[in-house]
Amino acid sequence: MPWDPDALWIYAVTLATLLAAALGLPIPEEIPIVTAGAVCGHPDTPVRWWIYLPVLIVGVVMGDGILYFIGYRWGNQLLQNSWVRRRLLPPDRQERIERRIQKYGIWILLGARLTPGLRSPIFLMAGSHRLPFIKFLIADGIYAIPGVSLLFWLAYLFSDQFIRLIEEAEKWRPIIVLIVLSAVAIYLLRFFWKHPVAEGDPKDVPIIGRQVASHVGKQPPGNNPPEEPRT
Image 1 (cartoon, rainbow, N blue to C red):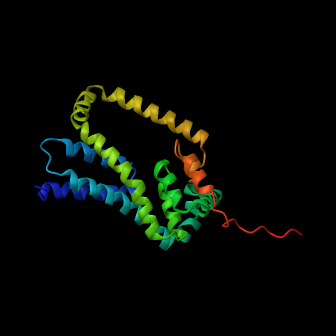
Image 2: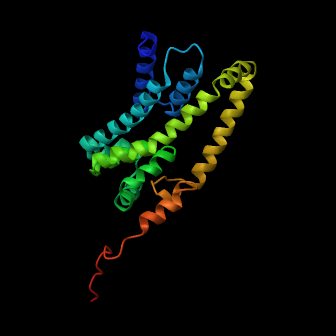
């Protein structure tokens, strides 16, 4: 039954976790999404996928929307805060992101969605730069729905294997944790060595970034800015 009290509790906790992750809880939003898919795939689950999946999508978009409104209301104060400028968004990085927002508009949300560590600053600055909220909401939903659905259905379809893998992994947990942490550390070192600053440029996004950048970069005839008179 969809409105089982246990199911309602699970929906609510998952939604709260997604919102907390958007606001700074140090967990990736992918973790509750994958966990939800595995829970739905269990034969004795009280939840239903046609409720759970929309809850996940709404939670992701709501979290992004909250960041947008924080940027819209307090963005300038936050961006001028000394701790933010020193630790999170130095002035040179802010300037580069601002140029990307002015150049790409809502297309920058694609880069934000697919680039690690870029979502929060981009959504905050999108609000502070007053990108149209309706366009922001539509674009964010379009970008979020395929990603959330893909992770959810992969976990759903392979939930039995996922559970068996967890049971087997308990025997080897110390070694697995060491290997995973080492792999993540190596990947992050390599990534940030090659990309010291993420600026929201679609060209930075693998596979599709260049196509997006080339599409956005093309201006229709007659819309080119007038040339300045030569002196």
